[in-house]
Image (cartoon, rainbow, N blue to C red; front, side, top):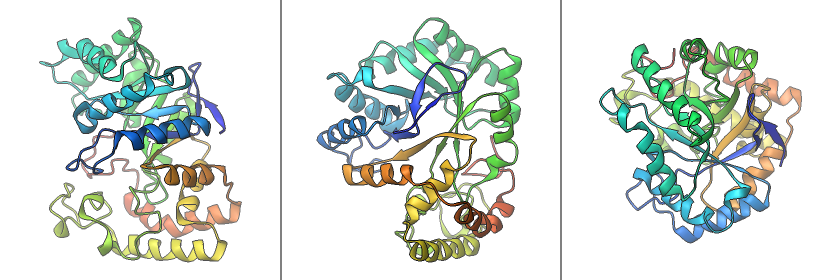
Length: 336
């Protein structure tokens, strides 16, 4: 597995990041039930294949993701792994609990430190944003975390980070072939300032994996982004009409391109993301070893320039409609 330097840190991470959101999930969780033995087998296989970067969050399955990960890594895997965790934005009343929340996370993970800790989502209150960033820096200064970063931050928010003199190594962002807003402003900023990009949802939670022929087949829980019509789905927050005809056309065109080239839809879309030099590592959610092998194979494919250009052209109508918006879920974006 190819390794890359994470921003201006000393951490070398695999170009694949394994997402652990499903770990510890019960039957009513977002991704459904995940058995501990399945997670353990998956993690050992991923380490053996050269994956060393693993992502979780305080809120995933109400802390059960961290607990499940901790149970596995405590049996000799910790030194082979770089763990990235995400702490939610706290209110002013909650800020005094910040350090304790990090300690609680370490306890769930059964480790003494985090390799990377990210602020999970920014807020529009600039003073509250600064207060959370100050606490993030403090836990680094105390040695609880090796490096710090952000998630879903726009250029304006990263400028505030820079003005505070805080050194971040990574910004975790939603980015894929039908959600390209980051290309317009965020990527030029991260490249200029040596901030790595960790791209999540490269397959739009399976929508770009070739499993659906029609947008109507996509489960409502996967159809919640700005791409879909809020009048058809009560789970959607953005209140707009989406761009379903354009998404439908892209899905049709993607499957045709896959048939023509002999490259699977997943491989096309993952390799397309990795072809952008602004992206350091790509975050994939994986449930089993079969999916792991498929994603590792996709990571190794280098698309010809003409195929990349065709995917750019096919997704251009959606990119134009999305514009610079980098928030998957709503138009009155928290990412500015």
